[in-house]
Image (tube, rainbow, N blue to C red; front, side, top):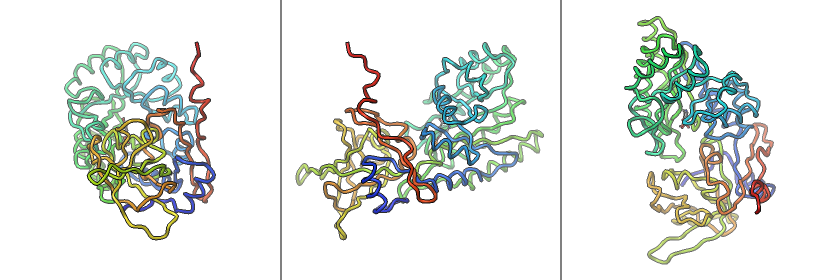
Length: 417
Ligand SMILES: Cc1ncc(COP(=O)(O)O)c(C=O)c1O
């Protein structure tokens, strides 16, 4: 059975008493430890770590990383604005997006960096900023993700400029006298470390097409073990071979390449726990299942229902000794797909999980929810309000970093006719 990452039973009870549940609880120590590991990624000619803010966009988290010297990867114009509002200076923000923002001119004039992610984006950029410097996100032809839905490389992915279209990209670059200073490849979330390393090394070859490029951004995608039996990417190991490959490239070409990485998951995934309450327990008989119904679900954590992702689940009971029991853990949405214990990579399949025997009212902690949970959920479905976010500071203080939403806030933009 899985164990708690950083919460204790007493702390969890105290938080529930004061802030209710469900609630996301972050650990500042864990966030800072992850930041320091990412900042030690091996490099030869300099490193910029960009936090992929889509993983968790709370302003306090962005500021915490900013203080530690981490820059930002934004994936929409709105994320850029959000980071700027959080106090991040525009020069530290890089935009790589599926959609070219309507107010791009304003954003670029503020000083952000930009990676064009399609041929039409080069055209749009060139028209408004001829002779400017920018980056290209290339789909290197290979991808790898924890699930098919998080693989963003190869022929089935629309992300980036297809590697065989580089000559078309060059024609547009010449047309607008643009300067490509950065090559960007991000191949997926939860990537196989071997594939990541291979693609990273082959990305160095892409630099040969663009003699002005001095930055190589290898994206994020470092596999994090949420469950105790899952593998985890070792940043030092994969980083060393990239550093060596960049050394060889320097010897061959005389070019000193500054490395960028863009972790989202690695920085936040295991630094947040979701505190929930068991609201009901039902059964479908001897040939069926025992279901634990929690006061969370798609509204706070979609990853199991979307990808078949596995998250540790821990029941905190008032009773001292407990037997274990197999449960299907489900969410509170009126949706049979609101499942928390799905089979690995099979979001439609129920997979019973052995947990401590639970009672209605027990606290239930779901671990590993820092990435793609509070920022990526079915917000307000069934009119459940957005859950609060709390930070346990290094000195043990507890800070509220997002309030629970009110019903008034859910309906505030509706117009009654
Ligand atoms: C361009 C880019 N960079 C970085 C990331 C972060 O990936 P991860 O959270 O797997 O580290 C993503 C995630 O999709 C991305 O699209």
